[in-house]
Amino acid sequence: MALPRREYLRHNPFGSSAAVGAVVLGSLGAILGDDVSEGMTLSLHATGTVMAHLWGATFAVGGVLKLYGLYWGRSTMEIPGLWLMSAGYAFYGITVVTGLGIGGLAAGILATVLAVGCLFKVRSIMRRARIVVRQNDAEAE
Image (cartoon, rainbow, N blue to C red):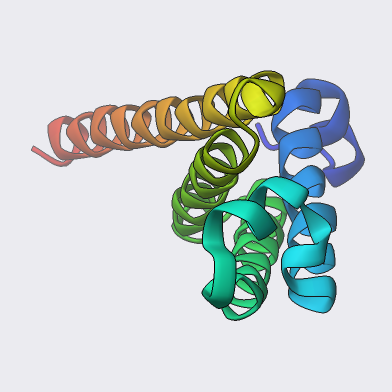
């Protein structure tokens, strides 16, 4: 039985929050460039602005796809969103630690954990999809 859309926030607060964070942080990166993060500025040097704009746009799109997939029951949209979010969080974590060193460790660890969480969610969705396909195949026989 499908949940009403408003119930997805209550039943998936972490996934929704991670996606909203990706949209907000990604939008800031797309608008501000490398000024969004001192670690990004320091680690990317001359290419920082272009990379930050691209990262931000991609990251924000990932968050939007994740939210769309979650709230409208479209795992075919949620999975690419999670992949983009995972890449965005990983990139942010790497640039913060590279640019700030020990000073960026906390943000880098948090971003890395979010990246890994996105990958685990993709794995979970794919596993569930395989189970459903097997059940449908068994019922069709």
